[in-house]
Every structure is written in structure tokens, then in C-alpha cells.
Image (cartoon, rainbow, N blue to C red; front, side, top):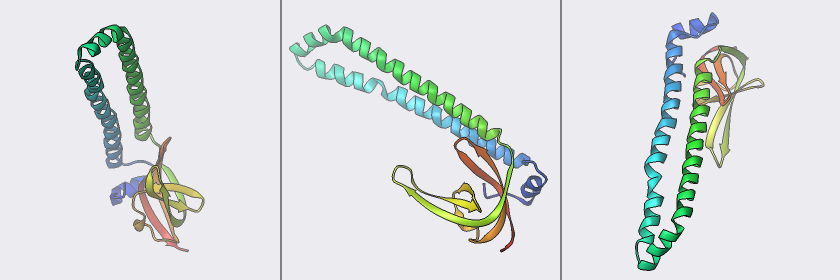
Length: 175
């Protein structure tokens, strides 16, 4: 969160997260929770399509219909298996996302100080990214041009199991 106010920074300097920052954290967590719900509805909405396609193929000819009748018990078992697997996946996704959202909201304020270095990365699976190095500490950032390379900064941030996020920062000096 780079759009912090002087009041936010002052709260962070005093060792606490401001009400405005807590509200932002709540909104981020709610967005995370919503995303898994949207995915669940998407999966549920498209689950019948393969079944309808199988039925359409079997309904083409007389021989296919006879095969469908004889294969019906196996198809029902396969369909039930798919429903169970998809349901388990959605349930586990929801639990994991809920845990991540709670971690985000319950994050404690951490303070890191050091000389800034922006490191750009590329992973074929995830794409490009960048992080801020403050001496040996690595913090993910979305826009590194806020930090002057080599400048000395104090960064107020939170930490979750999936990464860290910046709440505010201040430039200490040029070293």
C-alpha cells in the first residue's frame, strides 16, 4: 500500500497500524475471499457441460444409445467421483483462502531498515515481478520506482505465509 498518509506513517512510527490501514487490509482479505467464491461458482456452472456432451455423443445413433444404457452404471460412478473430487478441491481452496485472508488481517506491524536495492525477477510460470532488498531483507513490491536505489529506508510492513506487504515507508538518509 503505497498511498499512505502522514497519519498512517505516524501510527506506524508509534508501533501500530492505523485504522485506515486496517480497513485496507480488511478490504484486501474480503477480495481474496470473494475470489475463491467466484471460482467455485464458475466451476459449478461449467461442470454439467462435459456430461451433456457425453450424452449428446451417445444419443447420435441406436448403437450409441444401447451402449449408453449398458455403460450407465459406470458413468454414474465416474460422475459421482468427479463431483466428490471437485467438491473436495473447492472445500480445500476455500479453507486455504480463508486462512490466508485471516493471516493478512491479523498481520503484525514489522519494521525493517536498510539500504534499498530493487531486484527485478522473471519466472516463466508467474511472470515478472520485483522486490525491495533492504540489506538482507526481501520485500515484494509492485512498483520499485518509489524507492531510490542506494537510499536508506525504514519500511513498515506486514507478513503472511504467502508474502509481505508494505504499509508505509520513510527515507532515512543517503548513505
